[in-house]
Image 1 (cartoon, rainbow, N blue to C red):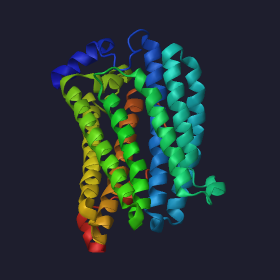
Image 2 (tube, rainbow, N blue to C red; image 1 turned 45 degrees about the vertical axis):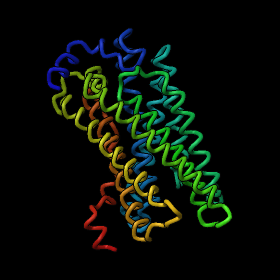
Image 3 (cartoon, rainbow, N blue to C red; image 1 turned 90 degrees about the vertical axis):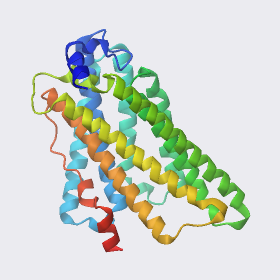
Image 4 (cartoon, helix red, strand yellow; image 1 turned 120 degrees about the horizontal axis):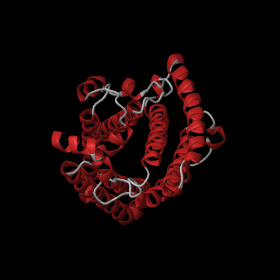
Amino acid sequence: MERGLTLARTNWRRINQMNFYGKNAQQDRYFVEIRNCLELIYWVAADIDHFVESKPELIDKKVLEIIFQNSTQLKNFYSETEEKINVLKGPHKECALVLADYIKSCIEEFDFIQNKDREEESDDVKYSRMFDADINFRDKFDKYFLKTDVELYRLRAFKHFTLALSSLIDFTAFIGNNSELSLAENKRAQAIKHICDAEAILKIGCRFMERNDASTRDFFIAYSGNTQFSAQQYYQYQVEFNSILQELFFIQRNFYSQFDNDQMPEDTEFKLVDFETEKYYGQLNQIGFEISKIILAAMNKDIPNFILLSPLANKNQLDFIKVK
Protein backbone atom coordinates (compact mmCIF):
# COMPACT_ATOMS: atom_id res chain seq x y z
CA MET A 1 0.00 0.00 0.00
CA GLU A 2 2.82 2.42 0.81
CA ARG A 3 4.20 2.17 -2.73
CA GLY A 4 0.74 2.87 -4.14
CA LEU A 5 0.32 5.92 -1.92
CA THR A 6 3.67 7.29 -3.09
CA LEU A 7 2.67 6.88 -6.72
CA ALA A 8 -0.64 8.58 -6.04
CA ARG A 9 1.10 11.51 -4.36
CA THR A 10 3.16 12.28 -7.46
CA ASN A 11 0.63 11.37 -10.13
CA TRP A 12 -2.84 12.04 -8.75
CA ARG A 13 -4.10 13.08 -12.20
CA ARG A 14 -3.84 9.46 -13.29
CA ILE A 15 -6.18 8.33 -10.51
CA ASN A 16 -9.24 9.91 -12.12
CA GLN A 17 -11.76 8.45 -9.65
CA MET A 18 -14.52 10.84 -10.68
CA ASN A 19 -14.80 10.59 -14.43
CA PHE A 20 -14.20 14.33 -14.81
CA TYR A 21 -11.01 14.49 -12.70
CA GLY A 22 -7.68 15.33 -14.30
CA LYS A 23 -8.76 17.95 -16.86
CA ASN A 24 -8.64 21.03 -14.63
CA ALA A 25 -6.65 20.83 -11.38
CA GLN A 26 -8.23 23.93 -9.83
CA GLN A 27 -11.76 22.75 -10.59
CA ASP A 28 -10.86 19.38 -9.08
CA ARG A 29 -9.72 21.06 -5.85
CA TYR A 30 -12.83 23.22 -5.66
CA PHE A 31 -14.99 20.16 -6.19
CA VAL A 32 -13.19 18.08 -3.54
CA GLU A 33 -13.66 20.89 -1.02
CA ILE A 34 -17.35 21.36 -1.82
CA ARG A 35 -18.11 17.67 -1.92
CA ASN A 36 -16.49 17.01 1.45
CA CYS A 37 -18.20 20.02 3.04
CA LEU A 38 -21.54 18.67 1.84
CA GLU A 39 -20.80 15.14 3.02
CA LEU A 40 -19.62 16.45 6.39
CA ILE A 41 -22.95 18.27 6.71
CA TYR A 42 -24.81 15.06 5.85
CA TRP A 43 -23.03 13.07 8.56
CA VAL A 44 -23.79 15.71 11.20
CA ALA A 45 -27.47 15.82 10.18
CA ALA A 46 -27.65 12.00 10.16
CA ASP A 47 -25.97 11.90 13.56
CA ILE A 48 -28.64 14.17 15.05
CA ASP A 49 -31.45 12.15 13.47
CA HIS A 50 -29.94 8.85 14.60
CA PHE A 51 -29.57 10.02 18.19
CA VAL A 52 -33.04 11.54 18.42
CA GLU A 53 -34.67 8.41 16.97
CA SER A 54 -32.64 5.78 18.82
CA LYS A 55 -31.81 7.40 22.17
CA PRO A 56 -34.59 9.83 23.15
CA GLU A 57 -34.11 8.83 26.80
CA LEU A 58 -30.62 10.37 26.72
CA ILE A 59 -31.80 13.78 25.58
CA ASP A 60 -31.31 16.26 28.39
CA LYS A 61 -30.64 20.00 28.48
CA LYS A 62 -26.98 19.59 27.52
CA VAL A 63 -27.79 17.30 24.59
CA LEU A 64 -30.50 19.67 23.40
CA GLU A 65 -27.98 22.49 23.38
CA ILE A 66 -25.66 20.39 21.21
CA ILE A 67 -28.53 19.52 18.85
CA PHE A 68 -29.54 23.16 18.43
CA GLN A 69 -25.92 24.25 17.98
CA ASN A 70 -25.18 21.55 15.40
CA SER A 71 -28.46 22.21 13.56
CA THR A 72 -27.82 25.95 13.28
CA GLN A 73 -24.20 25.50 12.26
CA LEU A 74 -24.89 22.86 9.63
CA LYS A 75 -27.58 24.98 7.97
CA ASN A 76 -25.28 28.00 7.84
CA PHE A 77 -22.41 25.84 6.60
CA TYR A 78 -24.67 24.38 3.92
CA SER A 79 -25.62 27.87 2.70
CA GLU A 80 -21.95 28.87 2.53
CA THR A 81 -21.05 25.68 0.67
CA GLU A 82 -23.96 26.01 -1.75
CA GLU A 83 -22.69 29.46 -2.70
CA LYS A 84 -19.27 28.01 -3.50
CA ILE A 85 -20.80 25.72 -6.15
CA ASN A 86 -20.93 28.80 -8.40
CA VAL A 87 -17.14 28.57 -8.88
CA LEU A 88 -17.57 25.17 -10.53
CA LYS A 89 -18.21 24.55 -14.20
CA GLY A 90 -19.34 21.72 -16.43
CA PRO A 91 -19.55 18.20 -14.94
CA HIS A 92 -17.89 19.40 -11.70
CA LYS A 93 -20.86 21.71 -11.13
CA GLU A 94 -23.48 19.23 -12.36
CA CYS A 95 -22.22 16.57 -9.95
CA ALA A 96 -21.99 19.01 -7.02
CA LEU A 97 -25.57 20.17 -7.62
CA VAL A 98 -26.86 16.58 -7.57
CA LEU A 99 -25.15 16.04 -4.23
CA ALA A 100 -26.22 19.43 -2.81
CA ASP A 101 -29.88 18.81 -3.67
CA TYR A 102 -29.79 15.45 -1.90
CA ILE A 103 -28.03 16.83 1.17
CA LYS A 104 -30.58 19.65 1.36
CA SER A 105 -33.46 17.14 1.31
CA CYS A 106 -31.74 15.14 4.08
CA ILE A 107 -31.28 18.25 6.23
CA GLU A 108 -34.99 18.99 5.88
CA GLU A 109 -35.99 15.37 6.50
CA PHE A 110 -33.81 14.98 9.57
CA ASP A 111 -34.78 18.33 11.12
CA PHE A 112 -37.13 17.22 13.89
CA ILE A 113 -37.24 20.79 15.23
CA GLN A 114 -38.78 22.21 12.07
CA ASN A 115 -40.84 19.13 11.19
CA LYS A 116 -43.69 19.75 13.63
CA ASP A 117 -46.11 19.84 10.69
CA ARG A 118 -45.15 16.25 9.83
CA GLU A 119 -45.89 14.80 13.27
CA GLU A 120 -49.20 13.41 12.05
CA GLU A 121 -47.62 11.89 8.96
CA SER A 122 -47.65 8.09 8.82
CA ASP A 123 -44.38 6.17 8.82
CA ASP A 124 -45.34 4.64 5.46
CA VAL A 125 -45.52 8.05 3.81
CA LYS A 126 -42.34 9.28 5.50
CA TYR A 127 -40.24 6.24 4.62
CA SER A 128 -41.58 6.03 1.08
CA ARG A 129 -40.54 9.64 0.46
CA MET A 130 -37.10 9.09 2.00
CA PHE A 131 -36.45 5.85 0.12
CA ASP A 132 -37.52 7.37 -3.21
CA ALA A 133 -35.24 10.38 -2.68
CA ASP A 134 -32.34 8.12 -1.70
CA ILE A 135 -32.65 5.83 -4.71
CA ASN A 136 -33.18 8.76 -7.09
CA PHE A 137 -30.00 10.42 -5.80
CA ARG A 138 -27.90 7.26 -6.11
CA ASP A 139 -29.11 6.68 -9.68
CA LYS A 140 -28.09 10.23 -10.63
CA PHE A 141 -24.77 10.23 -8.75
CA ASP A 142 -23.71 6.84 -10.11
CA LYS A 143 -22.77 8.13 -13.56
CA TYR A 144 -19.98 10.39 -12.27
CA PHE A 145 -17.80 7.52 -10.98
CA LEU A 146 -15.30 5.35 -12.76
CA LYS A 147 -15.66 1.59 -12.43
CA THR A 148 -12.55 1.10 -10.29
CA ASP A 149 -13.52 3.19 -7.29
CA VAL A 150 -14.86 1.71 -4.06
CA GLU A 151 -17.28 4.62 -3.62
CA LEU A 152 -19.19 3.59 -6.73
CA TYR A 153 -19.78 0.20 -5.15
CA ARG A 154 -20.71 1.69 -1.79
CA LEU A 155 -23.22 3.86 -3.63
CA ARG A 156 -24.76 0.83 -5.33
CA ALA A 157 -24.64 -1.27 -2.16
CA PHE A 158 -26.50 1.45 -0.25
CA LYS A 159 -29.13 1.52 -3.00
CA HIS A 160 -29.79 -2.20 -2.58
CA PHE A 161 -29.88 -1.79 1.18
CA THR A 162 -32.49 0.96 0.80
CA LEU A 163 -34.56 -1.38 -1.39
CA ALA A 164 -34.16 -4.06 1.29
CA LEU A 165 -35.40 -1.70 4.00
CA SER A 166 -38.41 -0.83 1.86
CA SER A 167 -39.25 -4.53 1.52
CA LEU A 168 -38.74 -5.09 5.24
CA ILE A 169 -41.25 -2.39 6.12
CA ASP A 170 -43.83 -4.24 3.99
CA PHE A 171 -42.77 -7.53 5.56
CA THR A 172 -43.34 -6.13 9.05
CA ALA A 173 -46.82 -4.95 8.03
CA PHE A 174 -47.78 -8.36 6.59
CA ILE A 175 -46.23 -10.72 9.15
CA GLY A 176 -48.85 -10.07 11.81
CA ASN A 177 -51.75 -11.08 9.56
CA ASN A 178 -52.26 -14.81 8.94
CA SER A 179 -54.03 -14.13 5.65
CA GLU A 180 -51.00 -12.26 4.32
CA LEU A 181 -48.18 -14.60 5.34
CA SER A 182 -47.35 -15.42 1.70
CA LEU A 183 -46.99 -11.71 0.96
CA ALA A 184 -44.79 -11.38 4.03
CA GLU A 185 -42.58 -14.22 2.85
CA ASN A 186 -42.22 -12.65 -0.59
CA LYS A 187 -41.13 -9.36 0.95
CA ARG A 188 -38.72 -11.12 3.29
CA ALA A 189 -37.17 -12.97 0.34
CA GLN A 190 -36.88 -9.71 -1.61
CA ALA A 191 -35.18 -8.01 1.30
CA ILE A 192 -32.66 -10.81 1.82
CA LYS A 193 -31.83 -10.83 -1.90
CA HIS A 194 -31.21 -7.08 -1.88
CA ILE A 195 -28.96 -7.40 1.18
CA CYS A 196 -27.04 -10.25 -0.48
CA ASP A 197 -26.65 -8.08 -3.58
CA ALA A 198 -25.42 -5.20 -1.41
CA GLU A 199 -22.83 -7.49 0.23
CA ALA A 200 -21.62 -8.83 -3.12
CA ILE A 201 -21.33 -5.35 -4.63
CA LEU A 202 -19.41 -4.00 -1.64
CA LYS A 203 -16.96 -6.94 -1.83
CA ILE A 204 -16.19 -5.99 -5.44
CA GLY A 205 -15.49 -2.42 -4.34
CA CYS A 206 -13.23 -3.61 -1.52
CA ARG A 207 -11.21 -5.69 -3.97
CA PHE A 208 -10.74 -2.65 -6.23
CA MET A 209 -9.71 -0.64 -3.18
CA GLU A 210 -6.98 -3.17 -2.35
CA ARG A 211 -5.59 -3.09 -5.88
CA ASN A 212 -5.56 0.60 -6.83
CA ASP A 213 -5.19 4.07 -5.34
CA ALA A 214 -8.59 5.45 -6.28
CA SER A 215 -9.81 5.47 -2.67
CA THR A 216 -7.13 8.04 -1.73
CA ARG A 217 -7.57 10.33 -4.76
CA ASP A 218 -9.42 13.09 -2.84
CA PHE A 219 -6.68 13.21 -0.22
CA PHE A 220 -3.93 13.85 -2.76
CA ILE A 221 -5.98 16.42 -4.65
CA ALA A 222 -6.63 18.14 -1.31
CA TYR A 223 -3.16 17.73 0.20
CA SER A 224 -1.37 21.03 0.76
CA GLY A 225 1.43 20.08 3.12
CA ASN A 226 -0.67 19.72 6.27
CA THR A 227 0.95 16.93 8.27
CA GLN A 228 -1.86 16.55 10.81
CA PHE A 229 -3.20 13.59 8.86
CA SER A 230 -1.62 11.13 6.45
CA ALA A 231 -2.92 9.32 3.40
CA GLN A 232 -2.52 6.08 5.34
CA GLN A 233 -4.88 7.34 8.07
CA TYR A 234 -7.37 8.37 5.42
CA TYR A 235 -7.13 4.95 3.79
CA GLN A 236 -7.64 3.18 7.13
CA TYR A 237 -10.80 5.16 7.77
CA GLN A 238 -12.06 3.95 4.38
CA VAL A 239 -11.26 0.36 5.38
CA GLU A 240 -13.06 0.81 8.69
CA PHE A 241 -16.11 2.29 6.96
CA ASN A 242 -16.30 -0.74 4.66
CA SER A 243 -15.93 -3.11 7.60
CA ILE A 244 -18.78 -1.49 9.55
CA LEU A 245 -20.99 -1.52 6.47
CA GLN A 246 -20.28 -5.21 5.93
CA GLU A 247 -21.22 -5.92 9.54
CA LEU A 248 -24.46 -3.97 9.15
CA PHE A 249 -25.41 -5.95 6.06
CA PHE A 250 -24.48 -9.25 7.73
CA ILE A 251 -26.51 -8.73 10.89
CA GLN A 252 -29.60 -7.73 8.91
CA ARG A 253 -29.33 -10.67 6.49
CA ASN A 254 -28.62 -13.14 9.29
CA PHE A 255 -31.51 -11.92 11.42
CA TYR A 256 -34.20 -11.96 8.73
CA SER A 257 -33.04 -15.36 7.50
CA GLN A 258 -34.25 -16.75 10.85
CA PHE A 259 -37.89 -16.29 9.88
CA ASP A 260 -37.93 -19.51 7.84
CA ASN A 261 -40.94 -21.75 8.35
CA ASP A 262 -42.83 -18.90 10.06
CA GLN A 263 -40.59 -19.17 13.11
CA MET A 264 -40.40 -15.82 14.86
CA PRO A 265 -37.14 -14.96 16.63
CA GLU A 266 -37.27 -14.36 20.36
CA ASP A 267 -37.98 -10.86 21.63
CA THR A 268 -34.44 -10.63 22.97
CA GLU A 269 -33.13 -11.30 19.46
CA PHE A 270 -35.19 -8.39 18.13
CA LYS A 271 -33.75 -6.14 20.82
CA LEU A 272 -30.20 -7.28 20.17
CA VAL A 273 -30.39 -6.75 16.39
CA ASP A 274 -31.91 -3.30 16.97
CA PHE A 275 -29.09 -2.51 19.38
CA GLU A 276 -26.41 -3.68 16.93
CA THR A 277 -28.02 -1.88 13.99
CA GLU A 278 -28.19 1.39 15.90
CA LYS A 279 -24.55 0.96 16.91
CA TYR A 280 -23.42 0.44 13.32
CA TYR A 281 -25.41 3.43 12.07
CA GLY A 282 -23.78 5.58 14.73
CA GLN A 283 -20.32 4.31 13.79
CA LEU A 284 -20.93 5.01 10.10
CA ASN A 285 -21.86 8.58 11.01
CA GLN A 286 -18.65 8.98 13.00
CA ILE A 287 -16.31 7.46 10.40
CA GLY A 288 -18.00 9.27 7.52
CA PHE A 289 -17.57 12.52 9.44
CA GLU A 290 -13.87 11.82 10.06
CA ILE A 291 -13.23 10.97 6.40
CA SER A 292 -14.53 14.35 5.22
CA LYS A 293 -12.89 16.13 8.14
CA ILE A 294 -9.47 14.77 7.11
CA ILE A 295 -9.91 16.07 3.56
CA LEU A 296 -10.88 19.54 4.75
CA ALA A 297 -8.00 19.57 7.23
CA ALA A 298 -5.62 18.62 4.42
CA MET A 299 -6.92 21.66 2.53
CA ASN A 300 -6.52 23.87 5.64
CA LYS A 301 -10.23 24.66 5.57
CA ASP A 302 -12.02 25.78 8.72
CA ILE A 303 -15.20 23.97 9.70
CA PRO A 304 -17.75 24.67 12.44
CA ASN A 305 -17.23 23.11 15.85
CA PHE A 306 -19.59 20.18 15.38
CA ILE A 307 -20.05 17.80 18.33
CA LEU A 308 -21.25 14.35 17.30
CA LEU A 309 -23.82 12.68 19.53
CA SER A 310 -23.35 9.07 18.39
CA PRO A 311 -20.42 8.44 20.78
CA LEU A 312 -22.85 9.03 23.66
CA ALA A 313 -25.07 6.21 22.43
CA ASN A 314 -22.53 3.61 21.35
CA LYS A 315 -21.96 0.88 23.92
CA ASN A 316 -20.60 -2.61 23.50
CA GLN A 317 -22.56 -5.86 23.70
CA LEU A 318 -21.55 -6.50 27.31
CA ASP A 319 -23.16 -3.17 28.25
CA PHE A 320 -26.28 -4.27 26.37
CA ILE A 321 -26.43 -7.56 28.26
CA LYS A 322 -25.96 -5.79 31.61
CA VAL A 323 -28.73 -3.29 30.87
CA LYS A 324 -31.15 -5.95 29.70
